[in-house]
Each structure stands twice: as structure tokens, then as C-alpha cells.
View 1 (cartoon, rainbow, N blue to C red):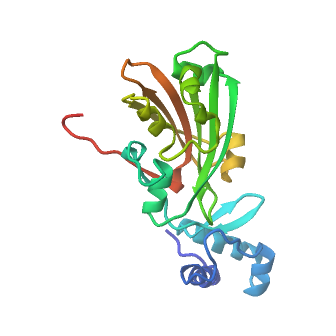
View 2 (view 1 turned 30 degrees about the horizontal axis):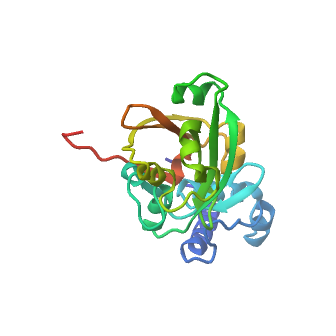
View 3 (view 1 turned 90 degrees about the horizontal axis):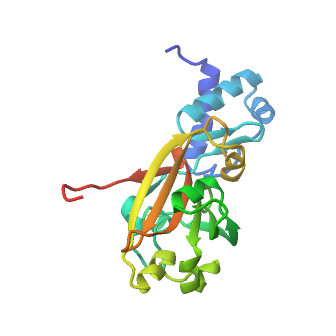
Length: 249
């Protein structure tokens, strides 16, 4: 592999040192290409090469048409078991983020909808059936969103647990409320990978060439009835999924 021009490498090293030493914090934007060219007395093609080298090192993310942003440190490590484990008020994403020393955030909207084809198939109901939809955008403070998570709950369950209509569903969230009804929940999850859709690129602040994981999870009750379905869209390089198996699984 050819060595980069000495000037580009020098600019890369200088900017990398500022990032590593914390002068440029996660989420901060680098100066514009023009400003960097003036600061380092270099032409813009050299600056562009230096920024590409920073991106290859995983220190920055180049956002087309917007600028270059310092990457947040490391992905959130998420264990599949976190969905069944309550720590304090939280399960799932909040547990994983906090155990990794990060401060999570969630933006939630709640409404009733007539489900379209995809969630209807996963819920096992006819298209147009009314369900409660809980849509979340989740991430860690100081960084862009990590994932979206949309849950559809059948109305029979909502009528028994009216707090599900609220943004705050109480300690442990929906799965703790289901357990309080005496239900034993079994989960089934399907994971695929694809390019992001236009609305996902906007919400998650990613480029078209950044792949996303898509996860569909069903929750079954003791009678093998599907009580809710969750669809997560996860930025591939911001989230690390961990699955643990045993011979008795």
C-alpha cells in the first residue's frame, strides 16, 4: 500500500493528537476543509486526504454535505440477555450503555396506529389491525443516535396495562408490566443487515454507505400468543451485539 504524502500524514497526526488528548471531544466538528488548508498551509486535496486517513483510523466520521465529526468512543456493547435483566429502573439499551460508562438518552412517541404489512406479519394479525405503537430514538449523550426501536403492542394487552399509553411505563418498562400480569415471556429475534433507508439516514445521522442492522423481535406469552413486536434499526459501527448460548438452549 503506497505511503500517504508527508504533508497529509503530518496533518493527520496533528489532528489525531488533538482528538486523543481530548482537545477535540467526541461529537465535535472539525474545522472546514478551507480552514484546515489555511491553518496547515496546504492545498485542499491534501487536507481531504488527511481527513480520509483520520476516518480510516476510526477517529472521525465524514458526513457528506455536512462536515467531519469526531467519533464517539467505541460502540455500545449490548447483550441479548439485557432485555430480560432489570437493573434499577432499566432494561435493554439503558442497561448496556450505563454498564459501559455511557449516559443513555431515549426520545419516545406513543400513538395508536393501523399496522401496515410488515408489523402485521410479525404480530400475526391482519393488515390494518389497531395496535399501540411506541417509537424510540436512542443513543448516548455527546454522540449521534445509536438506534431506533419501534414497538407495536396488541390492544388486548394495552387495555390490561393502560400505562403503556404513557411515555414513562415505570421501572423495567413494558416487560416488567407484563411480568406483573403473571405472564412468562419468551423472545424470538431475527437479525439482518442492509443499507439505511432515507428517513433512517436522517434520524440516525449516517451516510448512505453506513450499513444498519435490522432486528425484529417477537414476545410470546405462556399460550404462545404474540403480545408485542419490536423493530430495531441499529447503526452497525455504533452498537455491538452479544449473544450467549448453552447446550440446553
